[in-house]
Length: 187
View 1: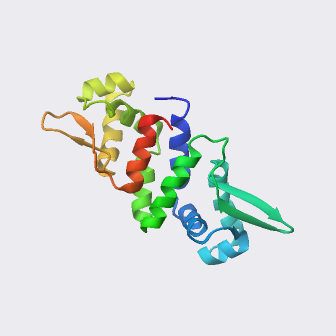
View 2: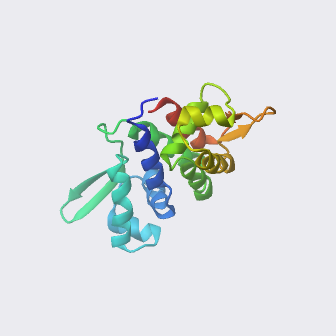
């Protein structure tokens, strides 16, 4: 796994694990390019708040802004300089097309909002591992490893087999499945 991309994925997941950001992104994905004032009105928030919520996904390469006179318009468009932005934006667009609600999206994004959880997913991609083997492969302390495994279990990412080994769950829901694939491949 390409360790250079791992922090980018978890930081981007952290940016998107926000209900207001998901709402502005949903409006842009489902309705197309919007000026900030129209987007703010649609989302029921002040223009300054909408602007603030747009900046973070734009910085992660998921939105493109353009100025036209005194208006700023945003649209969902992957930045080619941010390698993981295209597959991540495509995954988000598929989730909105399926009608996934905010709770499902939040669960998927919060599963991978920490670099250690990305490492755990990467370590489990080849085979199920006992806790000691997982600790050795990830270089995560046992208490921290248990804490992250609990979160991954609650989010439907990992499970345990009859021998007590941890494994990735193969049938994760849509967006979570896409995010896990990105975590496993480093893209």
